[in-house]
Image 1 (tube, one colour):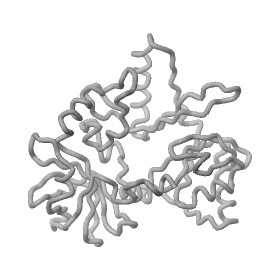
Image 2: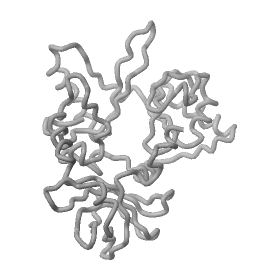
Image 3: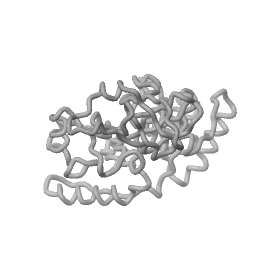
Image 4: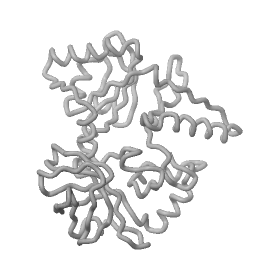
Length: 306
């Protein structure tokens, strides 16, 4: 979601819901970060008021009505298949789609999406059925070879960092543009009527891109850790700092996201990122590093689309 200036207002997921009973239109579900909860609701309300002459829409906060349970990892489909009577194969339930499914005695919304870089599903469960669904998942997993492991936010932070997934308020904020954050692929520039912030985004795109870019940075040495605020050097010159980082257990090193600037008014080319001698200052010592505009883990998205 952008401002009129083309800068980021919020990072959210919009899901087109399956049709309801009798073929009634399902509408949309918007999921925002907890820190932007009321901000996003207000933006949607203002947008509806602004566009009122063109149609009718309402926005309702249903946060308290649902619990979210994530099944993520290479065996997530295997486990979900054992839990539901619905077909959750790749052909029936493709990436970035949503389905109503049954688990135990509950009917819930499942979306095939991930924030960890693996095959996965997010389950939106009515709160009155949350404990039942959770217990059903655990008991089914324990009865079969599904390898279920409980994971928390620290694990999530590490996995999403390896994949280069952004987090609004940490890696990017309302001073960054869509293209600077590397999220240009989310924009539909052919959308009828356009979208808020489209004109400045198109202008930046037409100028061969932004002068600074959010990149993934990984240390060559597996020992030092990064957190945030570490200064980044390219060919001995300071070009930015780490906005957020974690230890990447799959990559075998500390990995983070950083906004870098080559220090000129010229657009920052991809070859500038892939070349040069990169270093990160960790606790007063510079460590060799590598930078990339593409995810260092599964850059072709083969795992999440498997």
